[in-house]
Length: 178
Image 1: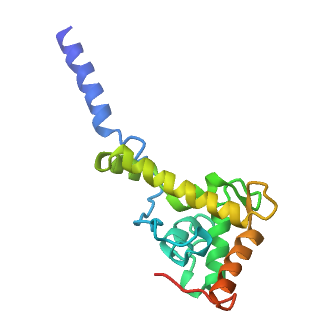
Image 2: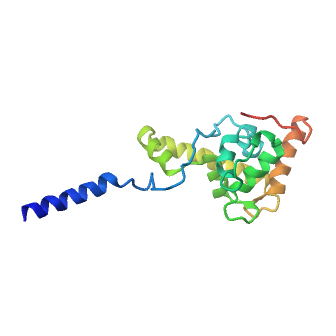
Image 3: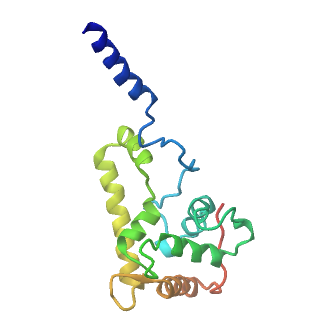
């Protein structure tokens, strides 16, 4: 009986030792991660934020799921913005809702969230989320022309062009971020 208990205990322990858990699935695809750019209080409106829209590492992460080995260095700013929009349209209705926009800018996966929970005060993370919600509300209020609660690609681009007109830039010129 004593040996049976010990063998049972060793079996259970070895199961837990060899189990990799949900963060490291066996045979799972290795996902490259980088530190994502996140808008701050001094950042411009979401669809006017070149650093957010041209975050090539962020776009590459998503695009690799669709196109094998995409070469983002050959893409124009307009193409990067198009892919940014399309890759975050998770329900594929050609519109971004508030949650899709939040996911695009917050872009937090479970591992990042677990790490940050130990480092950040819960109040601080709520302040960040509230800031992002305010950014999303601003974009939807100013650029959602038909007021349906969604941002279509044409509304997304029109909002960007109106900012360029206000600042005196040509509608096709944008600054790039690395």
